[in-house]
Image (cartoon, rainbow, N blue to C red):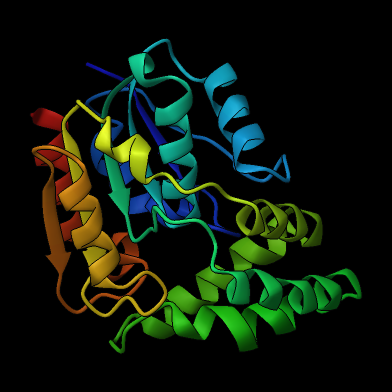
Length: 230
């Protein structure tokens, strides 16, 4: 079985994919790569490649998807298939990039939890019975990763390259998936990616926002399982 490399979103770790890890690790080797060690997307991607199997299936959510696209650009021959979840192929908009500077300043002054609680995490999820528990988990992941990772990831996102040409050149089985209520990376970003990647498949998960792996784990896992088996 082809190994699976999973890339979590900003200020998230393997817990973001816990339901999928439980399902897939009985079938194949599963690697969750950290993405907080560099302040550039290119540097993060190079580190993942340095530690990844020679050839692998690649799955990334949000910032993890941004890094996945850079991995595809740097080493397309090593990627057997790719799944891009709740992400964005475009470079950072200047207004969004500028808005990260005040957040970085707050986090460097000791306000990581306040920034995550007040400015970021509430925008991630749709309403539902699991929303509160998932938000608590997101806060725990952010707290464990800490302010230095937040700063490096923010800097990497500010400078990230546009990857639309990378997607046009993609020739491996590709899955595009997002929550229908994702306000951070809306549906139209995913229809764009489907249009860019030849023969890709798009799935929109109802009753989910930016984190369908946790909000609708059974449906998301089933879709990913079909992608892995193609």
